[in-house]
Structure formats: C-alpha cells, structure tokens
Length: 434
Length: 124
Image (cartoon, rainbow over all chains, first blue to last red; front, side, top):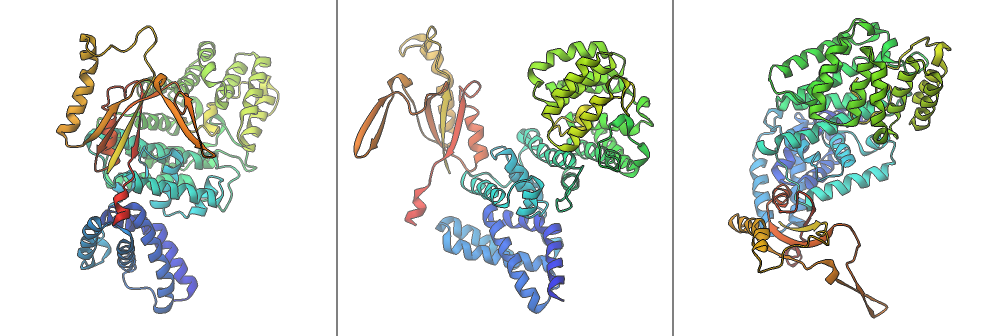
C-alpha cells in the first residue's frame, strides 16, 4: 500500500473507530487523559509501521494493543505504586485477549457522559465530544467554531486535565442522576447541531458539517440506550435538517418557512424523523425534546404553510412551557398565536417579554413582522432596525434588510409576507423550535 | 480523593442575626448541620470541617518586599462569604457533588468543591 493509502486508511479509522477505541481504553485504564495520549501515540506508530509492513489484518486490534503498551510505559514511569499495580494487572489481562472488533467492548456511552460532564465548561463539553466521539481533529473543531487551533488545543487540554485531576468519573450515571446528566449530553448535541445550522449559508468548504456530526451522535446514543428523549432529539434534528435545501435560494439568501419550496425538502429524512418520533412517543414519557420534535413534525407534515396545524402547535407550546418556562419559548408561542389570527393579542403579550429579550435578535424580528401585519408600518421598520443591529452574520442581516424594505407591501415579498419565526432563520442558540 | 467543600452564603440580615450558642434557637439552627456531619461520619467520608466566624473578624495578611502588610477584612469583598468548610474523602467528583448538594445552605448559597492536592505521590 502506498503512503497516501495508509494515510487514508488511518483517517478512516480515526473517523469511524477512534471513539470506540478511546472508550474501551479509558474503561481499562480508568483514566481518560492517559487513554487519549496512548491512543494518539498508537496512531503515530501505525503511520510508521504500516508504511513499512502494510496494514495489519485486524487494524483496530493492532491499534488497541499498541495503545495499551504505550499506556503501560507511561504508567510505569509516572503513576503511584498502588494504582499502578491495579491498572497494570488489568492491562496484562487484556493483553491476552484476542483483538477482534467484536471483542472490543463498546464503552462509548460512558465516554460521552464523561465528555459532557456538567463540571466542565459548556464549550469544552462540545469540543471534547467532537474530538472523542466524532474523531474530529483539533484543527477541524477550531475551524467549526471559528477559533484558532492553539486556543482550541488549550481548551481541550484544560478539560482533559480537569477530568483527570478533579476525579470526573468514567461511568454511566445511575438512575437518580440519569435525567439530569442525559439532559447535559442532549444539550451538547443540540448545541453542535445549532452551530451547524447557523453556519449553513455561506458555508466554508473546509468546515465539517456540524449538523451531520450531531445526527451521528444522536444515532450513536439511540443505538446504545433507547430513551424517549434521545429519540426526540434525533427526530427534531432530522425533521429540521430535512428542510435545509429550501432554507436558502440560489444566491444564498435565507428563505422564510412560509415561502420555502417544499419540493426541495428531503422527504425521506423527514419521514425517518416522523417515524423516530413515533417510536419515542409509544414509550409514554414526554419530555421537552419530544415536544420540540412534535412541533417540527407539524411543519414537515403540512403540504403548505397555510395547511399547518397551528391549533395543535399552540397546545404543544403550552406543554413545552411546563418543561421549559423560558421567554424564548413564550416568544415562539406568541408567533403561533398570531398565525391563529391573534396578531393584536400576540403584540400586546409581546410587550411583557421585551425587558428580558431586548438583546435577542429574533424578538425584534418577530415583533417587526407582527407590527407589519397589524398595519403599523413605521413601528415595524423601527423594529427591523433593532433586529438588524443585533444580527450576527451577513446572510441574516441581508434577510432582515429585505424584510424591512417589504414592509407595507413594497418590495418583492409582498403584502403580509411573514417571517414565520425569526428564530428559524436566526442563529437562535437553543430554543429554535420552528 | 479528598475534596474541600467551601461553603459560601450571604450573611444574615443585620436585623435577623443567626442565633447565639446556648439558646434553644441555636439548637434548632444547628440541627441540620449536625445531621449532615453525622451522615458524613456514618458514610465514612468525613475528614474534617469547621465553621468560621463572620468576615468582620477577618484579617488579610501578605508579605511584600519583606514587609508584612495586614488589612482588615476578607481577601475578596463579595456578597456571599466563606462561612465554613468540610473536607470529605470520595471516590469521584460525582460523589463529592452529591454530598456538597446536601450541605444545609446549598439551596441558597454556593458550595465550591475543590480537589485537595495529593502530595503523597511526590514522596513515592
């Protein structure tokens, strides 16, 4: 095999199996940081050895065996005597094992709970999960979050050091902690998805698609543990991602949901999302991600914007508020209320949200849209100005400028053109329901 | 691993001071603390712990250019004050967090959980 092919094979293994190897090794060692270092060394060795001797028959077994030896070397040099004996004994026992893939235990569930531990900084949880479970390189993660590589590298090493030194365990949380800790994992995955979603327009070809990574992680979790909220999150992401091709026009301009060409939606992916939601709901334990998924499901199930079941959607928002009484959810609920004909009511209720959401772009965009529909054109344009001043990127800004110029029936969007949900087009961090 | 739980909470309002030792109110006030300490002992995780006098009694000391400087008050002026600590011995951070959450002021103050540095490794 030529050097290029060895590189390609190693990249593939890194991408597809690094998480599994890292998890198995962490389980043996009881230490995540050491496992990380030993595995990186094993990949480096592979580059040298495989180039000379060819790819071994069982590359994963080879990598795991070499990583264990690297770990043994490090332990002999560094660790305290008592712990050293215990860990070395475990490794010696493993050394005798055959190394077929089927015999590498899948410990990735433990790994993801460690990476998403609430004692870590939220951004570090995201970075560590992408590095460990998705096999992304530090530089890929840095690019995805528009950070420099050294900054991201430091963030990752700080997080790994805290896992080791503060005693963050490598284990699956017990029943009493499960909901809380799963919530932290799901929040990380959804954050990854939203970062990818916000970056959809004008995407840099060098950047990995974070939406795909988030869906990969949710599928992995579903395989490891059937939990209705995990299924709910997967369904939500699938039905949202299914609409991606219609979100921007040929020139990269954002298209509001109302005006999207529904033929462009990925109907197979939408169907998978709906089926996933069904399998969650039969488990009979409702939760916020299932409710958000149900809201998204109503959008992809409607043949056109006006055929959307707004009444059902309003009930879903009421249910969501019980789980998540946040102002962003209240804002989205009011947008639905307006669709049911309650524009004036929605506008008056919107006022009570202003103190909390005055720095939130989608609030001003939604308010502008409602004002425009109520015929208050001057106030609508002012509200668009507020939204424009808060927009984060060019595509969003351009979208809002076009909306503003369409107020009062002037411009290409026409009378009553609606930005159905500002959050849909904006980079709303967490509560983008629609 | 040993963890120090630093107990931060807002001081009681001036017109409602904490009860004085020796009064029946003090007994009631101390009950949850004693219960918690007993639990730590029963679970064999207790290493130690003390309550501190209020920050009005604090003196900060530092040496600069060979000269000892003393100042009235705590190191950092914050609304929440360090009122005491526990040192507990737990297997993982998760266990330490579980105990920290049981500390009687955790529902209105903040508990900072810090691993204690293990210097025995340096001696082999």
